[in-house]
Length: 229
Ligand code: FE
Image (cartoon, rainbow, N blue to C red; front, side):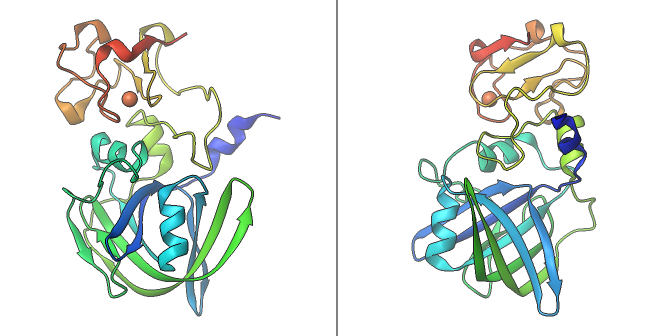
């Protein structure tokens, strides 16, 4: 079985928000699709270990923000590699309150969809949540980020709780010997790409990064990086 075949599936990159009362959270998801148009419904796949899973079940509502191609890796890292049990991810992010009361991320967002939970399907490690669309709107005319763009252009990886995570997945791109991997989150620093979100030009060797440079996804310092084997 060649699991590279699964990398050809054309996902997007989204932030799912949920919660009620004083408990809210957002997380990155790449598995979302429209199920039916009448009534208008969408489905998302969420890992049972994630805080958002608990909040969606508890509040029975969620929103999906479709991210733009220009979304910085730090923003994706905040929602993709940190747990809402440890940090308030929505604290310093631009949101609006949806008609269900769910906070909707509108920063780096192309459009959003707000739903009320209709049904769920137990799929082992994940649950598929299906919701009726109660509101949606376009926020900007930017291009939506595809998962392929995230992986190839931004050098992004899947967290271990993502439906698309593959252990030891080979990273696409340049010479393996010149790349360094973050031992905390799996981000790969590729000198061919650099870290443009943080002012590091393409062509900058890992060794030449300033000591103050940290992982654009999880903030780990340079000492946490290992040369890619
Ligand atoms: Fe990291």
